Image 1 (cartoon, rainbow over the protein chains, first blue to last red):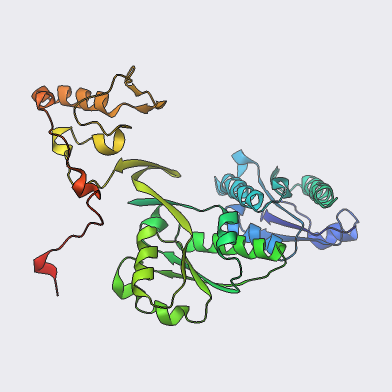
Image 2 (cartoon, helix red, strand yellow):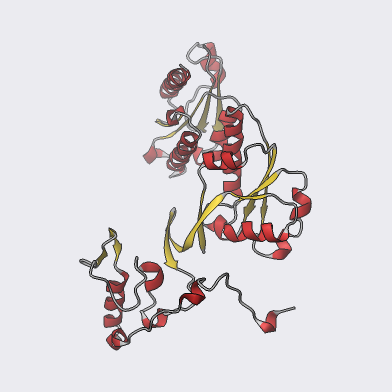
Length: 127
Length: 222
């Protein structure tokens, strides 16, 4: 079964592009990631719309709380992910299908791990 | 301001059952300030409803709009025309806005997107607290500016009940006893004599017990 994963990351997260990750076979083909200037720019609406557009699981990869380039961007993003969790739960969905990950600046490995974790959650939710 | 909160998404989905084209209508008044029904919340509610209906296999067409206020007639004027292509309008104003649309906009099927909760103040980002009950007979000059109608669980007029302990209300230890605070405040101001004034039995007619209230000001009438 193929699941569709949508990610959002900030300008400073993951130094390698999605296409390169796919070419290296590190992430599935049905993975898409939007790079934002800062995850603090992300709105709850964006997370919900990602599901509406077909994502089986959605995640946000932002800076570590204490190293956010914009001071509190990833903290804000985490709160918005929290509200999105509440809404999808009200809709009868598993709240684990949307998640926040805090990732060290420029690190790609944790993003790959996040994708794999969300694939696993989406597959579990579908079974 | 008037404080409100979003209704649960499932309640909203039940409400719009059978609706194929919906206008979600926000308000930039109090509900925008308390983050319940302004532009941003209209976007979130719309996205949640689209997702919910899509999961039900019943996609819905939703448009979004926000009015300056829903409690003044001039802002509602365009609504009947705006709404004519929609099966329903989900208002994210307070109950005043929903009622006003129902009263004035013939042919508009208006539904409430929020639960209107109280008149309150913003303690900090994301936290609001009730401060006024809109009872129509203000006694704040007698009570150091603290309202015993809204902030005493029993709306007592002449001092605390027997349940007040250590300055806290018996309903919840996190709630200050407002009469304890009134006492402290008046003592600090050396206005303790006020505490000896007995407030008469309250006439609740002004609080809505006499039916819907109306206020007229002759000098402002057209």
